[in-house]
Length: 289
Ligand SMILES: Nc1ncnc2c1ncn2[C@@H]1O[C@H](COP(=O)(O)OP(=O)(O)OP(=O)(O)O)[C@@H](O)[C@H]1O
Ligand SMILES: [Mg+2]
Image 1 (cartoon, rainbow, N blue to C red):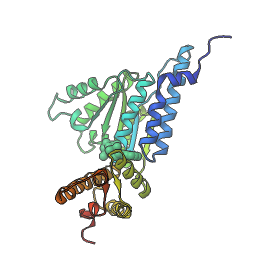
Image 2: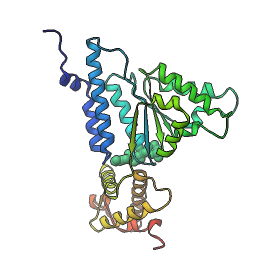
Image 3: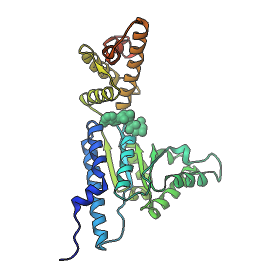
Image 4: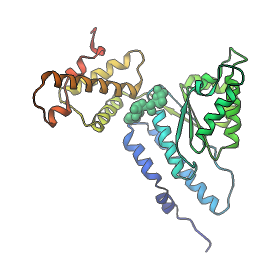
């Protein structure tokens, strides 16, 4: 019998499961996202086995597009993805370079190419995460320097496929419009992953997870108040999903600390960890009922 590859052993050796399991436990919901990332991990393990037998030769295209509203976990997942791709041998370094239009596009003639190339150089061996990628393209302005950055990106996405993964992130509709005006970019992005808004239940679970990780918990009476806070906050402008939950908790921590200091006196672990309704009720979210 010829040589055989034990996929289970390869998988264990890569320590990819540590990243995949952490993705499962650290992030609430996002089931389709997690499934897709597992599929990509399987693809890379199988690709490595194929390469051992000399089957095929082209590395898979892993450039991606992450669509979703602010605070739905796009940056967080991209970071984990970078580490995963590193463990699976696809990326040399596995770091993440997050940029927006201003990091790539210059204000004057001749400034864009060096800026874009510098960013690409920093990102080599890792993931280049371009937030709100559609701002690179301005339909109303033919001489916009963004087009120059796009062209350099397109070239590198093709020529350095095995050393750089580009993730374009932003709102779904704008991203669709961007791809329609930039077919070259569209054809180079193989994976489209959508990050839906979190449900009320998911936001609450995210909040509880964040509290637990920070060493706090809600008093029983604070549970419905926190829920009500989230319901109200969701209806307000600039709601940013999990990021808004994180900010709410940061402010509750401030009020909690202020309350303890105002009381003065002795405290123990109980007082130092439990958040009460007033720590949330003082928020502007509750004013003007
Ligand atoms: N599903 C989740 N479970 C737990 N925490 C989460 C989840 N999604 C996001 N977070 C946390 O919420 C915060 C915001 O997430 P992140 O920055 O990844 O969102 P984003 O989609 O990149 O947002 P933006 O588009 O505004 O950059 C981070 O602190 C992250 O850890
Ligand atoms: Mg982000």
